[in-house]
Image 1 (spheres, rainbow, N blue to C red):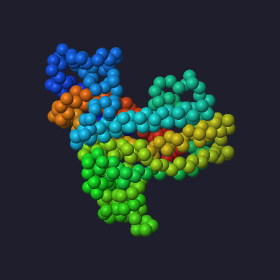
Image 2: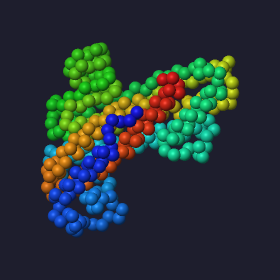
Image 3: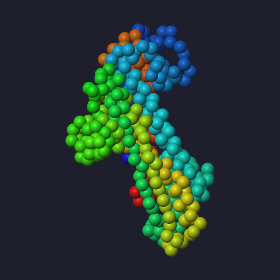
Image 4: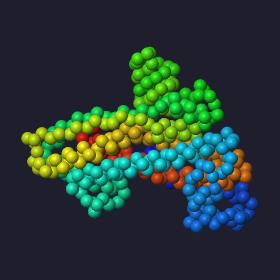
Length: 347
């Protein structure tokens, strides 16, 4: 499964827009940026170093007081969200990779077996697990699995407050709907009432509490992305409960059966926890991608809002766009591997 946005197209389109802005806003730009410092190894747009970046790196604080305006405040929220999103998706993919290696080590794999990227390593590990299951047991029925999935919740109230701050509005002017169970105040119809009359089920309206799933914030694209990325980073999850035992009567190779079960019990819980965490995170990535496209489409008219800071701001937009491929790749591999992990135990 892949997130539905085209990072390469977004990057190239944004770079073209950025080139146009640089040419339109800097005198003599075709001859180079007068007085611009030489940055060894800096990424370039149209043969020129990207202004406002350190070698193409994103820094939401690089362009001085640009965030004092409405457009600047929203842009900074988007840039901070981009930075946070890349960090959390890298960390997520790292947990997935380490979990695969943990399983692999228990079933006798070595460093020589872990070649390539995370998806390659995990594919090799789960391939070995599948082979082990085929030869260690007479049938899949030999495994007795008891599993309680983790429950992950985001704070819809916190998302609303983050969006309101970004918009420069009061929280009362912003709402959020919950994709799953809303535990708190529901402005509309609630399927199930909980203690004290609060909602404890599907809310047809704005949810003001904890949300199992993800919360859709009603705000402009950049502020919505900022709020939902923050929610996915701050998500709270219970621990998964996993028990795996084997029917001794159906075991063919005891040593291999024990090693495989030990490996799954050691590595699967982390991946299964990641699978639950991916629900709000995946949605946040999709929202962020839409915001990035809108930002790109606004092009030169948006950058001109910043006058003398236009070139610096443009550089930051380009740097953010460059992160999209890495963000997408990390989410995709995490989704794919967590699905394989669930399939291994029939979940």
